[in-house]
Image (cartoon, rainbow, N blue to C red):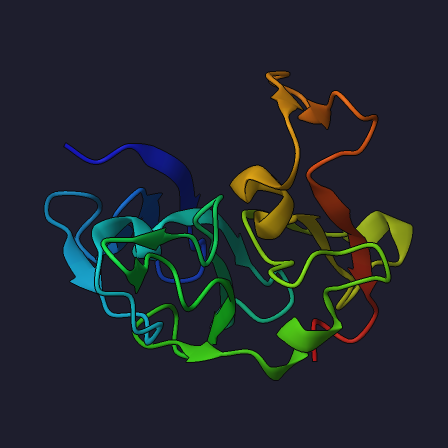
Amino acid sequence: GYGVNAVAVNPSNVSILVGTTYGLWRSTDHGHSFHRVSIPNHAKYGLGNWLASIAINPFNPREVTVDVGYAFGKKTYGGKVLAPGNGLYRSTNYGRTFKYMASNSQLTQPLSSDDPLGRISLSYSPVQSGGKNVLWALVQDAGLANGDHLIVDNPVLPVAVDGNTELNGLYRSNDDGK
C-alpha cells in the first residue's frame, strides 16, 4: 500500500484528495473509489511523486495547491534522478489537472542548497486574521537532507550535528503564491 501523507475534502463539491508516497488520488463519489491524478513532474520512480501537502483555497475552492516533495530531492538512484519535479503545483479545476507553479523559484534564500525544494507544508491564513489569499509554505531543503551534513533524528524539526537544519524557510505569499 501507499503511505498517506495528506487528505483534503473540498466542501464545495465534496471531492476528496489524498496525497500519498506515490502520488495524488481523487474521489468524486464520497470515497467509494479513487483514481490517480497525473501531476506533470517527469518522475520516473514512484518516490518522485511523493505528495506531502494539499491546500484548498477557502476563497476559491476550484483552486487546489499541492506539494510534490521527495525529501531527498534530486538524489540519484541507478544513475537517474529520483525526484526531478519537486515543488508546488496548482489546479484551477478542483484537482482534476495540475500545472507547475512559476513561483517555486522564489522558495529559496541565501543559505539554501542547490536543491532547495524538498517536502513542503502548505496552509492558508484564516479569514478572521485578514488572511484572504495569504498562503504559507514551510519548506524543507532537499539538498541538506540528501547528506550534506549529519542529521539528528528529531520528529519536529531535523537538526544537524553542526547546528544547521534541513529547513529552507517559512514563506508567506500575500498573493496566493503567484
